[in-house]
Amino acid sequence: MEPDISKNIEALLSAAVTAHRQGNLRQAATGYEQVLTTAPDHAIATQLLGTVALQNLQFDKARRLLNRAIELDPENGTTFHNLARLDEAEDKLHNAITNYQRAIELMPDNPDSSFSLANVLMSQGQLEESERWYRRTLAIDPAYAEAHRKIARLKKHTAVDSDVTAMETLFRANSTNDSARLQLAFGLGKAYEDMQNYDKAYTYFNTANKLKRAQMRFDINNWDKEIDKVIDVFTPDLFAQFCDAGQMDARPVFILGMPRSGTSLVEQVMASHSKVFGGGELQTLNTAIMTAMDVRHFPSNVPQLTPQAIMKMADGYLAQTSAISAGANYVTDKNPDNFKLIGMIKLMFPDARVIHTCRNPMDNCWSLYKNHFSDNGPFYSYDQTELGRYYLGYSRLMQHWHKVLPGFVHDIVYESLVADLDTSARALLNYCELEFEPACLEFHRTARSVRTASAVQVRQP
Image (cartoon, rainbow, N blue to C red; front, side, top):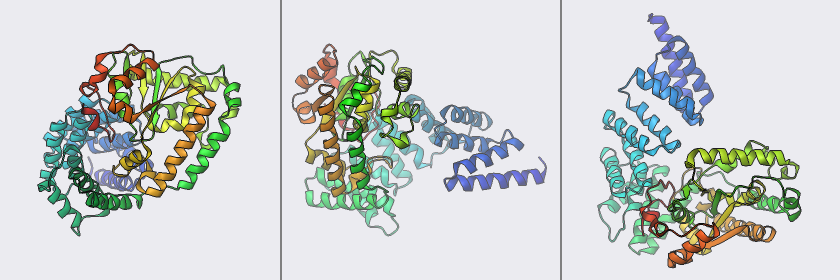
């Protein structure tokens, strides 16, 4: 390649990488494409364009580009790491493990691949192996705060040990930024709660939540208004208007409620049945609704829907869930936030099963407050006043659904499920018109991915 052309390619690549780091994905993609126009076999540009496609949720395009990048440079560990991220996004977790392992072989000093591998292993219930890889992460980078927090989640602490000391030392270090400090504070809160040092645990949890809340953009006042709008729109008259719309299909089973209310446990019990596929925390309902209405004006525009639009939503939902469920009689959708959309579920699937998990309000809110969630998780959980207001809004909306849709929602109390699993599981299966199977009581043995804050708990009998 001529020197001038080579310099131009490097300049284009450098500008695209800068845009990528700044979060300007469109500009980055344009730059990478310009590089590939001149140099179609440029492995780095191919890999980075595939990464942009992954970030834009263009999974087919991402896989094609990343596989091509591996053909061009089979020794690039970053490409295997990003291919593993894509596998995770598509729930191909065995492939993800293989590709993270290959990334580690090629980049043994990169802590991110070890950490990501540990996360996948934890989601699959391989807790000891998961801890081993978190510790491998810390061996590479002792300041990897999130690995410290994950180990704290996996352990039952009985006394201050080297793990706790390491977290406290790092927490106090001037070089530790707030993002790392909040991870450590959540981990230390968990450790001291295990040790029944509740004052110290609360101090750390409070610090962690204040640091996390400072990073969130959330206005609780909008939540109160949102509840009012939903209640105003979803009336008995609306349901009468659309009584003949939707798909008369009983396959969808929606498990919903507040996060940390037992949704993961209920799904694990259900998914242990031979006729049920556990879909996990799906975004499919939102996606299906978006295909037939402008969600920016939801719920005000619901009365203007047509039966055809509702059928389109239902068909889209069934197509997406059927693609992952291998012909199962029932498919669970464990997105807790779907409690906001029970009205839409009724319009789309009049015969659907809707399971609402309830938990003691104080216990539920405390469990939220002491857990760290992903950045797209429950923004309201990092301030006690906002958390209380959110819970009241949720409770008000659930009362509304029970009033306007009597019998459509089946409540299951978390405390009752834990205290008497046999009775609660049988009632749950009976509601879904399923025969009892002993495997439902051995839910902790069920081999499936759980990628929520409950990943450790659902592996315990």
